[in-house]
Length: 200
Image 1 (tube, helix red, strand yellow):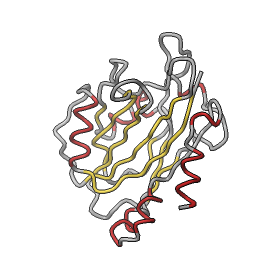
Image 2 (image 1 turned 120 degrees about the horizontal axis):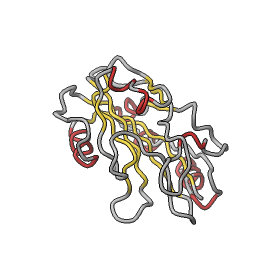
Image 3 (image 1 turned 135 degrees about the vertical axis):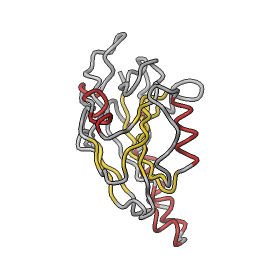
Image 4 (image 1 turned 90 degrees about the vertical axis):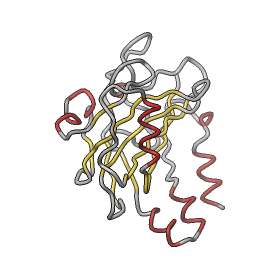
C-alpha cells in the first residue's frame, strides 16, 4: 500500500514542470503475491536519457510546429525478460492528450537477443539494421515523435517495453500505431514501464 501511495504521488503531473518520474508498474504484480506475477516483476526497463528529478533533455523533444527539440528517441535498456520471449516491442504514449491519447512511438520486431536501444535509434537507422519496424505516429510521420504538449499542465509519457511470444507480427513499416498496438498486445507475455512528465 505504501508503494502504491508513493507511485501515485510521484506520478502526479502537478508536482512540477519537466520532472522525470519513474513508476515501476511491476509493483502491482508484486502486491498480488501470485507466483506468475512475481516472475513478471523481474522484467524491468530503464533509460540513461531520463534521470529522476532532472528536466527532460531538449534532444528528446519534437522538432516541428512550435516545439524546437532534437526529436531523438531515448536510450532504453531492459532485463529479466521471460525465457520464452521471441521478440520485443516498444511504445511511447501520452495518455493525457485528448481522446484516446497520443501515440509518439511504436516499434516491433526487435530481436529477442537485443536488450537495449541506443539513443536516436529511430532516426539513425539502428532499428532497421536489426530488422525492427516502426509505426506511423500521431504526428503522421514514421518512427519517433518527441513530446510537444500544448502549454499548460504537464503531460505524462508512458514508455512500455513488451516481451512477446512471437517474432512474426505481420506488421510493416509505417502502419498506424493502433495496428501495432493490437498485434503487440495479442502476443505480450510481460511488460515493463517508465513514466516521465513534460510540460511547457
